[in-house]
Amino acid sequence: MSRFLVTVRLPEPAMTMLSEAGHVEVPAHRLTRAQLTDACASREYDVVVPQLTDTFDDSLLASAAIRGISNYAVGYDNIDVAAATRHGILVGNTPGVLTDATADLAMLLMLATARRCVEADAFLRTGRFTGWEPELLLGSDVTGAELGLVGFGRIARATAQRALGFGMTVRYASRRPVPDSELGALAGRVQRAPLDELVRDSDILSVHVPLNEETHHLVNATTFKAMKPSAILINTARGPIVDERALVDALRDGEIAGAGLDVYEREPTVVDGLADLPNTTLLPHLGSATRPVRTTMARLCAANAIAMARGERPPHLVNP
Ligand code: DGY
Image 1 (cartoon, protein in one colour):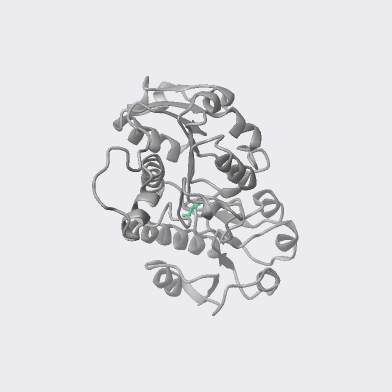
Image 2 (cartoon, protein in one colour; image 1 turned 120 degrees about the vertical axis):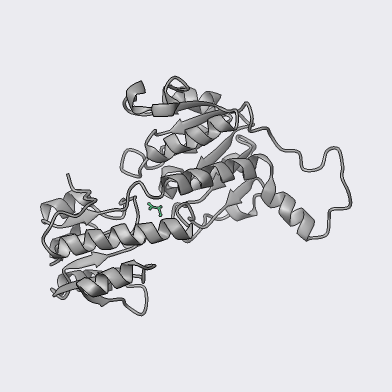
């Protein structure tokens, strides 16, 4: 019988699928690093189904006696995949299904930040709205703005599609040029540019790269100094891609106009000062948080876990 450790209870149908395939254990509390290490080494589980907040580094993986890790996320920067591969541990993720939801959230953050929605909402709720005024809470236009996409994977492309619908011009920076044949409806409507040009020219700069050694603090104090003072930064990817301390300084000093963030360097903590800034829209990592998307993620995640436990290739394998 297959044995699964699910670090946090998942939405259905995951729990039913896993229970029908084997024995499932869900700890009553979040596991500490030491508890997760011990659990993985205990030989009591075939597959661990973690959250993106559970970290699997080389030392944990070296002592692990499990067949696989089925991450409940598309991103897998919480797992040292090279080390997992070396130790013969499969890694699965949930790609594709959260693309549209995350692109929607990137648009939401652009619009909310450009139009100062958080400030405006607080303004009304605190009884300060005394009537229409010609210059009340003026924001910036999204229509006609230049959007720079840092990275051009699935979510960036879905964001580009939406942005074009809003009348924005769209450029992207990516390691390799994407041929028109891969771009579908975006062909001829988006241009590739060097990152420094995107940083310099964009009215909105939106981050869509995975987190790894190369992208850690890719957006930093130098980036903010090079951006337009009227520009807005959006991050729906991973927090540590942006140097959050430098971001607070840049927002405070007026080096950029605003930021819309769904992810943070040290979640769930937000760097000091960020939440005090009025020119920010701050969400608690909700990119994939629609009921249908989380349900589909749950199904994919369980399917990966069940295949791994049976010694089969999971439908969404991350190892090279
Ligand atoms: C992911 O899947 O990587 C998101 O950050 C959470 O759904």
